[in-house]
Length: 411
Image (cartoon, rainbow, N blue to C red):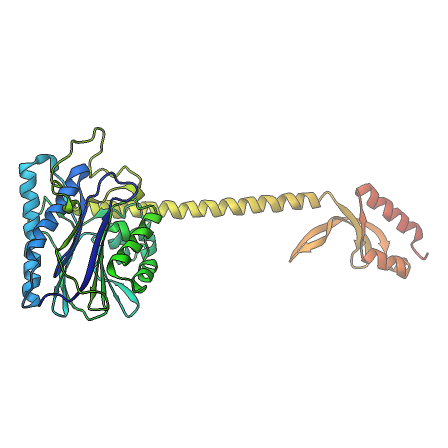
C-alpha cells in the first residue's frame, strides 16, 4: 500500500560552506538524507549517487522483511557505485556519504542508517532519537567517558567511524523495523541541523502542529540563526494527520537535485586533504577514520586532554589557594604592627596585634608583661583595661601603661 501522509524536504548550504554536499529525498514511500564528504567535489558526488540509487526502490512493498532486504541491498549497491566511480575518476578518491533512510510499509517504518545523520520520532509530545551516531564521540558517550552534552562540543565530534564510502564494498549498515501510527512525525536530518539546534528546540518546532514544509522552514531558520557552520538538510514525514495527503512527484534537494551535480569542479589550490584534521572543529568537515588503531589513538588523546584539563584545574586551585594564603599572610603581618593594652588573667599586658579574632585564629599575642595587677586598679579603670585600650604604636602603648601604673591602687 502507498504511504498515506505528507512530507517535505529542504536543504541549505549554510553560512560557512561554499557548496552543498548534502542530498535529500522525499518520495511516495521512501525518505532519505545523505551527507557527503570528500573535499570540494567528492561529497557532492557521493550523496548524489546515494539518492539516485535509492530512489529506484521507492515503490510499495508487500512485507517489511522484503523492504528491509531491498533497502540494505540498495545501500550496498551504492557502495559499489562509489567504488566504480572512483576507479573511473581517481580525483574523487576518499569520498563518502552518510545515509539515513526510512521506507514506509503499511503501519511500519523500515529504517537503514550509517554515519551521523539522524532519524528522530516525535510521538506523544516527545522527541526520540531513533538512530545511533557512528562517531568517535558517540563511542566515548557509550563507554561513559563523556556526557552527551560534552559530545556536542567535543573537538573530534566530526570524526565518523562508519560511513558509506569507496573503500568498503560491504558496509556495515544498521537496519531495523519500527511500528508507526497516525500522528507520528518523523524527522531525518544531517548534522548541520542536529549539531546546531538541540533536541528541546527541535521538539518545540515539531510540536507546533505546522505542516511539514513550514516545520522544516522553522528548523532551518533556527540552524541559520545558530550560525549554520555546515550544510543543513531536513526531511519531515507526517503519518496520517490533518495535513494534505502526499501526492505528486518526489522532492529531491541538495546536490542530488542538480542535473550536473556529479560533475567535478576544478580543484581549489591550497586545500588540505579531507582526512586532515587541522581546521577548527566547529567548521571542520566530517571525515572518516575507520582504522581501529586510529580509534585507540583518539581515545588516548582524549585521556591526555582529560588529564591536562584535570591538572589545569588543580593548578588553578593551587594558585587561588596560594593567593588567598598570601593575602591572609599580608593581613596578619599588618596586624603585627599594631599594639593595644588589655588584661591577661590577673594583670595588665601589652598585646601585639588587633583585638579581633577570625574564628579560632587569634590575631594578637602577648608582647610585654607590665607587672600591674588588675586588683590594684579602680573598678572603672579595670573595666576599661578589660575592654582593651587601643594604641597607635608600641611607645603609645607603654605610655598608657605608665599612666595606669601611676593610678594603680586607686583613682
